[in-house]
Image 1 (tube, rainbow, N blue to C red):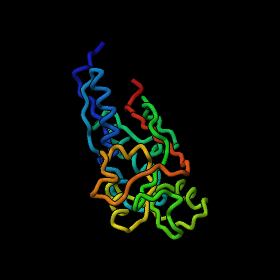
Image 2 (spheres, helix red, strand yellow; image 1 turned 90 degrees about the vertical axis):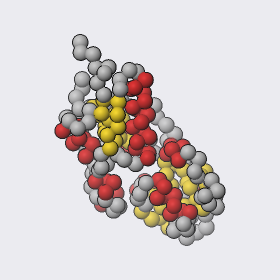
Image 3 (cartoon, rainbow, N blue to C red; image 1 turned 180 degrees about the vertical axis):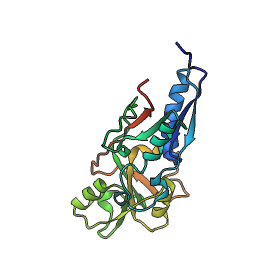
Image 4 (cartoon, one colour; image 1 turned 45 degrees about the horizontal axis):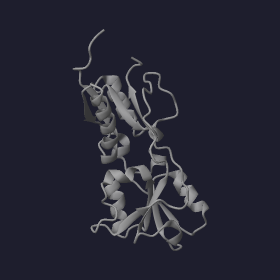
Length: 210
């Protein structure tokens, strides 16, 4: 049997703070088990194209990472489960699914308001068609706008007054290290009373079943 403990495992990841934090969790777990790892940043079409997600195609956050595995530039990749295309790609396997984190959605609103306190006509940003549909179904007279960009960019659209609130996955908020609600930001987060649900699993996919 070949001893692979001295072989550095290259983990492909997108370059955002959230993506590198998720991939870093996998790296740390593997390293703790005696398998040295390093993160390799891969730019994806979804990162470069800031158009509405529904309009820029399928697999825009995963295709470049998959090709990096196939080409041998990385040994595995870490994805958010929701970003994976539903069509199977037999070149790869899902090797592991870490324990699921908080599945709720969170509302980050100006002045610390909760969902029911936002007045009719308030503008809420979200990147999710599901979240947008659920918000419209409440009949609160809210204006829903598409939202792209990293977490800091999204939060700044609230603090700048461009948006009254945004809806994001609750699990991403600890990544911000308490910056929400700090004196430098006029917004804070509360999980909304509406129980919006979302997948928040990650998965790590190596090139081969072995």
